[in-house]
Amino acid sequence: MLSRVAENLYWMGRYLERAENTARFINSTTQVLLDLPRDAAFGWDVLLKVAGVDHEFATRYQRADEDSLMPFLIEDEKNPSSILSSIHNARENARTVREVLPMELWERINSLYLYIRENAARAKQGRGPRNEVLLGVIGRRESIIGLLTGSMSRDIAYQLIKLGRNLERADMTTRIVDVNSAVQLPADPALASLTSLRMWISSLNALSAYQMYRNHVGVHVRANDVVNYLLKNPHFPRTVLHCLAEIEGCLSVLPDHGAAMKKVRQAWRRVEAMQLDDLKPVVLHEYLDQVQRDLGDVHSAVARQYFHLHHQASEQ
Image 1 (tube, helix red, strand yellow):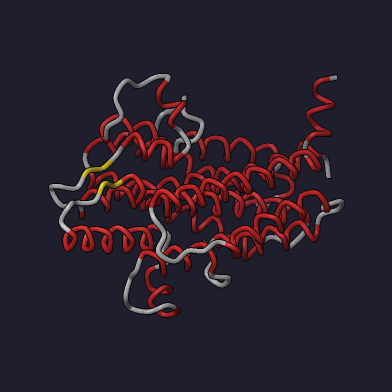
Image 2 (image 1 turned 180 degrees about the vertical axis):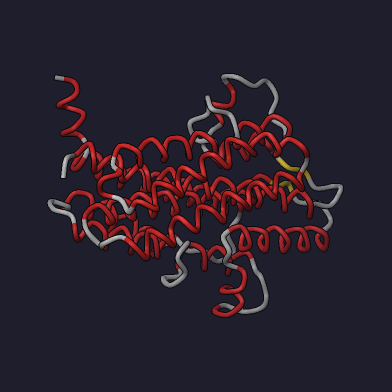
């Protein structure tokens, strides 16, 4: 397979996952806001850092608040990580590799792009319309993955899409968990405990993990248990360890995977070694930053092995 085709398939998978996960990230943030008591505070500047878009935001916006942040994350075409930009980029990548994809897949990706382009502005009309638009994105993206899973051979093209999807998914899981570091809890211990409970339930709901957590961990939602579940559970498809296992499986099918596989196993060992009992928010934030750096190292190793030949040829 040409390295250009490989790169486009990989990024198609990443961009589609990024669009859905950004929608989930926004919904999680919105739910946290709705559940906050009056004397709790939400740090929008911290949220930007959690999302990894603080530098891009600062170049064009003077104040970090909900009214400026939500359009930036949803419809700002100058933000390469916005939902609209991500879906547009996924569409362009899919267009160039249509010959290796099921025909219906291109049609659904194009339909998703038309939906967000026509409805993104509705997100400015309040939290209700915004939630409706974001749920529309999530549902349409899930239908694309269902079609992909049910109608594409498990060849190298499929593995590259899956590889990109799981790298992006693991990264965003850490960011949704990290949203809670943006909240300054109330001084009252009882109120702080209730606020923390609601925040962690919101995190589970953002990842569609609440029912599975109740089934496999317990009915009581505790911060340490939620973090442990979302990072280390090997069975739920949005946990970090499960995504790393999927990435390892994809790489095992690809040729010359040694360097990238080494980075995956390094990330795996680091997550498994994390001590997650009685974590303070600052320590948890540092842990999650390290996971994100490890995932970045995996991406860099994949790019060097499979995509750089295309870039080198373009530069000559």
